[in-house]
Length: 481
Ligand code: F0G
Image 1: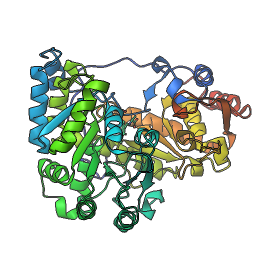
Image 2 (image 1 turned 90 degrees about the horizontal axis):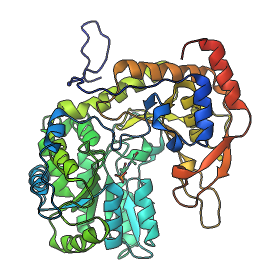
Image 3 (image 1 turned 90 degrees about the vertical axis):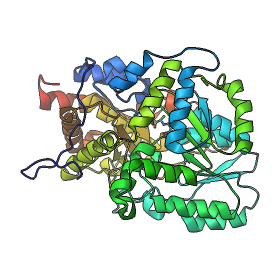
């Protein structure tokens, strides 16, 4: 592992920062955890943060900010139009990405709304290395569909392939030949979220771009998880290991016609950004941003966040900053592998991903293994993860369930937030749960919304397995939590 610092052969990552601001946590007794998850309809989105010990739901908007980011927020130039703070952000983004035009959006999916409205007509197909929930929803709502051109390896949850996020370039060539005129853009997602935060190689991006150029189709980069992808290019791609993070970023940007991202992830704030050097894209964006987001110099964001984003983007060019997440995730994954707990390998970015189908093979896919495991991990450890499986899919037009290709429980590690002992605690409770996995049953719907059902839906256990699990915990742990 990178960051192995022990003289005696033990491997662990080292924080290149110190903690100056802390937030108190609660760890409630098992009976209260059980009651909280039931009240939340077994949906971890509906839990209250005050009832959670380790919130590993997402890295979105909850990364630790730096002293310099907080300081910058104090100097923000609040104005509806022409804010100095936005000029600062434009200058920083131009310097890092080399794009001329910088447009704000209040978060990633807001940028997706604008791009989908600009590009997608009924019947269009958008090829991508893998979909993200909000991306797909925006494309579909505009009448288009998504073609996922991932490698076979992407679905191999335990692989030695360092770049499972690569696009299948042969499939892209074939699709662009076959569907001429129906492909408004090709999308590459950095640090491919839904397959376990897996990166693509710079070489793959070059090949994708060459094919796009041949067919005169723009390449759109979702850079929300770019920090992790940059780390993996630098550490796993032999040909790139001597390049600086700045140079790798610039080449990625040069290959992309449009870049957008959720700054809730990239830049460690709460916002979004779109970048291009092409005036024909700029004109359309300039019409839509004021309509949906706000004036072109704030786009729905607080000016304070804009100040902090400029600093956060610069900090992303620091290898010490971007290595922290992937190294902690690698540590957690190795601890789980050592205990023979099924987890996605190689470790990716964003978080650690438990393989629910192997963890609880007796729970049928129609009983939502990933959602079930999310509820069980919360009961066992007051650790909140996110279901990334069938519950995160939508039913088809006829109401049939669309079974996900993989059933994962994502345990996100927001950047620079958790300590090593908290990670060890999470691993310990997951280990206990794995030993007691036969007690875990499934879930069924109580209330199922039609769109993005995983956000608001409510489910219940299909037996009294949750009570039995909590009773076993109490018996094994006694008075401790
Ligand atoms: N693209 C990717 C790759 C994302 O991971 C996300 C959000 C978005 C777009 C949308 O950005 O939330 O700012 O509107 N991912 C969050 C997550 C929700 O928890 O993984 P947003």
